[in-house]
Image (cartoon, rainbow, N blue to C red; front, side):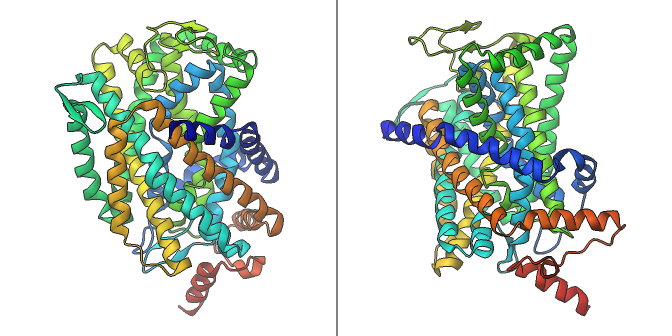
Amino acid sequence: METLVNTLNSYIWSDALIFLCLGAGLFYSILTRFAQVRHFKEMWRLLFNSNESDKGISSFQALSVSLSGRVGVGNIAGVAAAIGFGGPGAIFWMWVVAFLGASTAYAESTLGQLYKVNDNGQYRGGPAYYFERCLGWKWLGILFALSSIVACGIFLPGIQANAVGNAVTQVFGNGQMVSSSFGEVGSTKLIALAIILIVLAFIIFGGIKRIAHFTQIVVPFMALGYIVMALIIIFLNLEKIPGIFGLILSDAFTAQAGFGAAIGWGVKRGIYSNEAGQGTGPHAAAAAEVQHPAQQGLVQAFSVYVDTLFICTATALMILITQQYNVQGTLEAGQFIVQNVPADTIIASPAFTQMALLSVFGGIGPVFVGIALFFFAFTTILAYYYIAETNVAYLRRALNLSIPLTLVKLVIMFMVAYGTVNTAGYIWDLGDVGVGLMAWINIVGILIIFFISRPTMLALRDYEAQQKAGGPITFDPVKLGIKNATFWEERLKNQKSE
């Protein structure tokens, strides 16, 4: 099985996908005239839109739900893996992916809003919906739905749970070893697993409203706390900052682990972390109650900045300032291009980050990382559940199937349990397969949509024109020549009849 997964990864994460992700981001950046920069002030204003309704959630809640998916293990363990395998220069390529990916996030999230539906009193949308409704390609919608259910319902939750288990073990030790079908498992890890499953069940059985209300409190709090810890380390080492940025920039092009390794790991971990183009963000974006589809597109573009430029950079600076990292090259096992910490330190884990905080804050450092990882990973699992549920709902409509959502909840919980007790390397490889499949389908799909009908560009120009005219902000898809945006057609009709 592991050999099969590695083979799939070699095909899915070929150079073609890396150039596709970067190329799509550059393509949309140019066409939108770098909307991710021009509308930065508008992104801030839209964040605090409180138009929550019985059917939809507010823009801030949608941002929190999408950030709960973007801000996860990739921000702590993923950044460490990027540095460990690609060198400090990999961080530069994560920044590039974030900057360009913000425009991709705008495009996919605007599409999510444009083609969302009212499903029994709840807004739903995402790539499966806009592939069917915009392109008329139900088969592509079904293909993406199946891929996302497998990825978000089976592959990805295990990564988050695995990182939590490893972090808790590093803080509190293994505890008493217990024999299981997966080998020896520490009692500490089992206790952590029990807590996760109990709280997870309580929230996901409450639906998107409960998920949104939970994440709008937890996500800003955990992100701010994490950034504050990083700022303290930066403040204590101000004289090192110019050198650290110089190292990142120089290593990006003459990488210690090889130019290709820096780009490959930076792009891979960048996409995994901020999810721009992956097709996950549009699900939360579609659930938002907004005046215009472009508004939620801009909000979701900002979420990419929060994830990578703020939180991932915070992790990278903590690790590089304290020099708590190794760089593994294409050398014999156990040999490193750079070695600052013990050779047996697991690279694809939170270890570098925990060691960085330990070197500054003492014993409280690893404990803080363990707590941060718990919340980062837990909220990400919630986002994965919502994505899986949305795509199951799509299949129920598209194929007229009777698939109980309770089954989705149980599968997610089983995979959380499985991921917690499995090995880190293998479970990361499974996650990479899921992320890569979704990214291939979604990025190719949104590029095809652009060349056929350009709805995201029409929506952006319409929104900018209304802003320039001083409002009011409304949206009429028929006037713009956008077809099958039936939710917005019905909404406008109802507004005129009131």
